Length: 82
Length: 151
Image 1 (cartoon, rainbow over the protein chains, first blue to last red):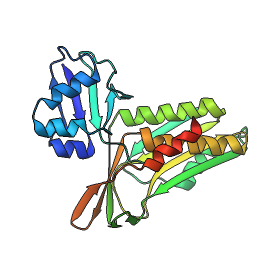
Image 2 (image 1 turned 60 degrees about the vertical axis):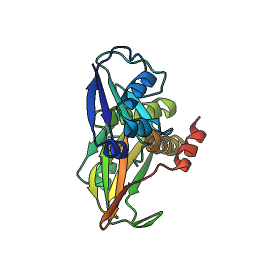
Image 3 (image 1 turned 60 degrees about the horizontal axis):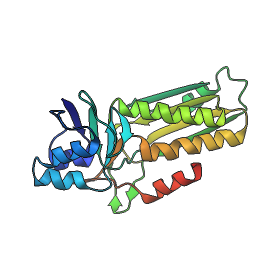
Image 4 (image 1 turned 135 degrees about the vertical axis):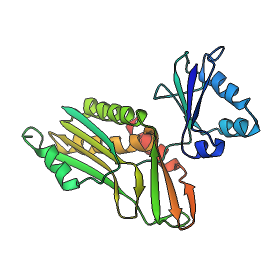
């Protein structure tokens, strides 16, 4: 399984703070994003937002970053701390 | 050489933080401190309160990593990064970055580097509320541009 997390505005948009999805075939962030998009139009639209940031195992990542079973993948809007 | 980070709901005392950066520290002649506070106006009106959300676990890792990068790059003495989460009101302090170094330029540069990276890499999100409405703060292009000087 892969643990998925959403934060801030994205979490509210999806009304979901996280879920687990089967890892089969999801070997990079792009494939994880595509699998989540298939959950419905709202997910498709929200996850295609071009400035969305992603982290794999709590480190900033990109679409090409590899993903393995047991990993934690988080999607979130651009950060606004400080 | 040390990096200390904390993510906390409680307020911090800048005077006490400065004292801890200076305690038994005779090698560093310079201390640079940046403190960020909540403003009562943003782009579209009056801000009554701010809620800061973060990604527990990743936040601490990113802050420690940014501090470590600064420590290595400028041979800093001590690095301390504090960031608040939860509910804050206008005028309250949100973030503290304090660094010590043998000389001023490395202290100033190290401090600037840390806050610039924190702004674009540390997973915090601000939600502003003005009375009955609330909205997520949008990231600023100028924050991304600020990174260019550290390339």
